[in-house]
Image 1 (cartoon, rainbow, N blue to C red):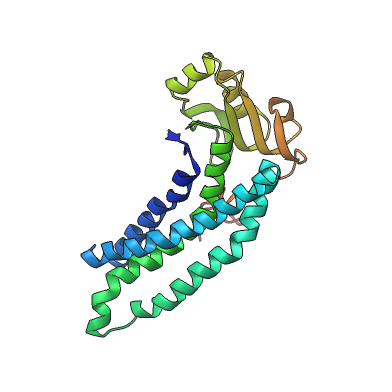
Image 2 (cartoon, rainbow, N blue to C red; image 1 turned 90 degrees about the vertical axis):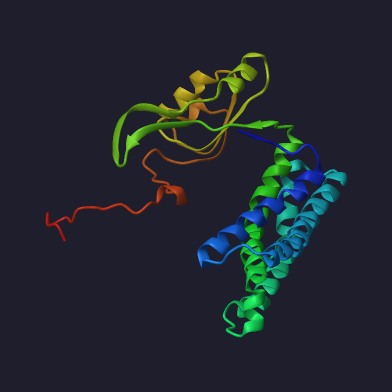
Length: 252
């Protein structure tokens, strides 16, 4: 469960933990210990990632002050500041990366700080472009709590019975019963078998999805694109590596 940000300042500062996560990952990946210079790198990293968030949030607030609709202001702000965010991050990373391959004693002394900046900035930049707009939407819509639910109807490629892997927590169910508005967001509603289970958990919620197929369309309140029932849609998180036996029936 995750609580949204109450004001724009917290939204901008939310980029700092993202940079910290990237810095720790970089040290782990390269087998470098965290040192005092790694901490010094965090100060510089925090300034850059917060600045990236500031220019995005500031443009969004300016567009909203002009009367631009929420969704359009968010898209315009993200597109309008994309070049500035990428150029700031890429030039900084490009200037520091050569130090990672320098073998001199002086460069080795600076490597932990460089790792913090390179990996932290690269990680935070990508996530800022996605998570800061999401945080803005959550704040503008007054979304205070985010919860997840997992319902399974397939075992790899074989369809089976419905199985709830992760139910909705009781506090969220209590909020719904007390009249709080709940928004359900899904990527795809296919036959509607899993969507129907979630609907039964939260019957009064507003159900939104990106893609809707005819068999499950009546279960959702809002969708972006309707596709035919025989259309296959693959998402990046669905494309895991899996062994498929050869057509010839062999084992190689």
